[in-house]
Image 1 (tube, helix red, strand yellow):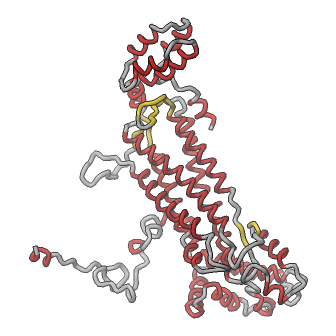
Image 2 (spheres, rainbow, N blue to C red):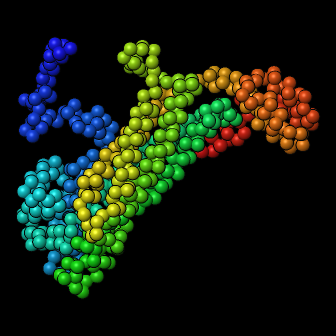
Image 3 (cartoon, rainbow, N blue to C red):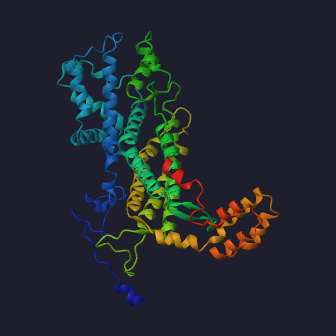
Length: 486
């Protein structure tokens, strides 16, 4: 064995764009390639294109850009207030120039902020210094340069930046995909409203439904989940180092800083939180994470049900030329999209529930543990978005096998036992449940046996005829109506 092991030496694998190799890589000195093959997270590697819509909000560039916006809007608001005479007013040209700094914030700008941060070792202070650099050529703004970040703690900027990022990502990246998922399920509900299907409770044959009704059930749940996601207000604060406007009032003791801060926060489209410590306590962000996790749980339930329906043949999957289902079994067409969705729901909800538990907890007036946790909000949202997109891809491949649905129904006439014993109860027949239990429990009946039992019942003739024409495929109650209503 020792001889063989000695021969199993791995050749060094070169890293593209680098002199390093996987076998010799020194993590302290190697220059890593920017190729997605070298990405540590699959969100920035294998799945990068699918989560691009979130990058403007939760990449470090996106966070810096949102911070810059808050700092600039705060300076403009201060300068526009007559009671704060030392700051402004700014001309329209200066206001426009300041707004362009955030509207046109570039990767080069972001790199400069990071370069300053390497000296300050403080990310928000680096933005303040960068802004002071950028206003040097504007006399009005330069004169007010010391009012950049005026009376602010870093968390005055950060909490608003994250709230803006979450709000924008929710509206532009998350909800469109979530709405597409609801729309796809609604379309399936309508298209297959009448497609009778054997139910399974506890995995056993049960009262029939329709395939459309089952899709409508999930669509309704997701619609409710959407309302919860949209209904979470993003809160914000701008009240200083411990939430009491201490520094503000030292500088301008007669000014109503709370009212001013409220107007400013609300001008950003956020809800004002008047009671905070140094940090906005993140309760609203925790509510958002919880709402998203609950929505993901519904998607997970759908993924697993569809996986199972595929496994028993109720759905076929469209075959794409060139695709391979197994490296060894040529016949395989695996439900990989629903499996991928399930895995990403798990990754997302682990993060979301960690965030909802962790973020509202901070020692005394502030500790820094939330700062690093917050940087993972985009990761949680990214895995959620991936889960929804994977589910959508899986839904697009489904084809209903009507023959298989009908075969399963016809093989399980015993499910009519519920219908028959309920009709017997109405007309006062003795021991209806017990009679049907004796006839059906643990047994498979065909149509002939079920009709023979019905024929022997002392029921009104019209009622008996109605039961005699009942089949598993027609015993669907209001399922079709409910499916079309969604």
